[in-house]
Amino acid sequence: MNACKYCDRIHRLGFISTRIAGTDGVSLETEKWAEVFQREGFECFYFAGELDRPPEISMLYEKAHFKHPVIKKLNNQCYGVTVRNRSTTKEIYALKVEMKDALYDFMEKFDLDLLVPENILTIPLNIPLGLALTEVISETGIPTIAHHHDFFWERQNFKTNAVWEYLNMAFPPHIPHIHHAVINTSADNQLSLRTGISATVIPNVMDFDNPPPTVATDDAGRVTGVQAPVAADRYACDVRRDLGVAEDELLILQPTRVVKRKGIEHAIELVSRLNLKAKLVISHASGDEGYDYEGRVREYSRMMNVDTIFVSDIINHKRGKTAKGKKIYTLYDIYPHADLVTYPSNFEGFGNAFLEAVYFCKPILVNTYSIYSMDIKPKGFAVVEMDGYVSAETVAKARKVLSDATYRRKMVAHNYKIATTYYSYTVLRRKLRNLLTDCMACLKKNDN
Image (cartoon, rainbow, N blue to C red; front, side, top):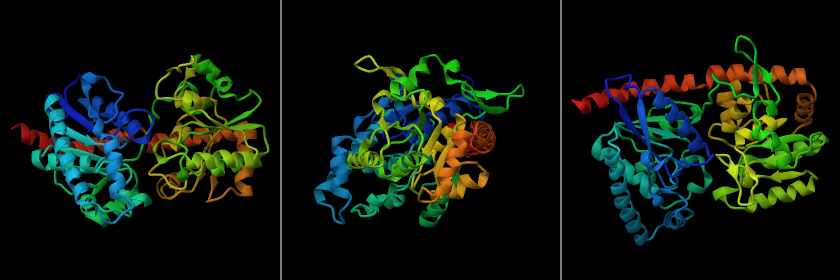
């Protein structure tokens, strides 16, 4: 590995999160940041309650996971109530001490120079871990870039709680050694207003400088549209068959978890009103937010006579086989086969699925959620829009996109060009370099 561009030695960076595994937004962005850091001359190491990284560069600490039984029980005692028991306080402090020891072990084992907490100083899903890391940073002065994805004040379920002093202390902490990065301008504004913390806005990104093999380019390397996915990747040539989508059917892809804020009813309504032969494919499971909404989605699909397919059992972050021998695909295997991507979310911190659809040159339906309206739409993307509900205009434009190949090709090529300008790895690299310049000054001071 090449030495750091800011001095003459290799620096060692530690990512810390509750989970660094799978296809959730935080894990995906962590992987992208790690790739850019490595290009800048850093070795990357990982600490989390769930990991898919090699053990020689990671430390698994199960209580760091927000799904750990101890943490879930603690959260039930802290949220939805306004007073907590003294025993709960004692348990928080005991866990904090235990987690501090684990964090110190992680830092010492890999001789870390820089920390990157991924959302654990942002969303209070693991209160002891946030408190522990805050104290570790205060005690060591280790340079830290805190990557914030979604703050507690953005989630209704955290607003009634019995832990306000902890939230104000550590979610996020106001410490000189921490440089803060947020993913949208609204978060930047609110963070500054609520805490006085100044942050750098670093949006989610994709590697638009390197198109996927299913995207066609001209001789100058400019994206012109899509090519046949089968020609690009033989492994994924059976995707439509394995999903149960016939060759003469449209594959409408909803590439999200089944949670209420994703607004999946709108996707179902759109498919119904298109009055075309189509299947709606939902890629991810309900996850940690319960299964009541999934029941609602299934019921609404029946009411609207839409064939909705739930395929989380054969989609994972890595290819493989199920216990019954069926192929497991990645989400990136599915995108090339989609005819339209639906993203009718009511709220998003940014919008990974939006960038993924653009990256794979797919037309997309977007609800005008606030961050899209503030940060993404002004860039000039061409999409099928809805503003809170599926209108006749929304349906008409979706039909035009699906039926007019020339119109569709120009739309996706236009979107790819814009995304390359604003949401590429080049943008991420430039913004991280600015933060690292400040951090490297701290590192050099510590080295002397």
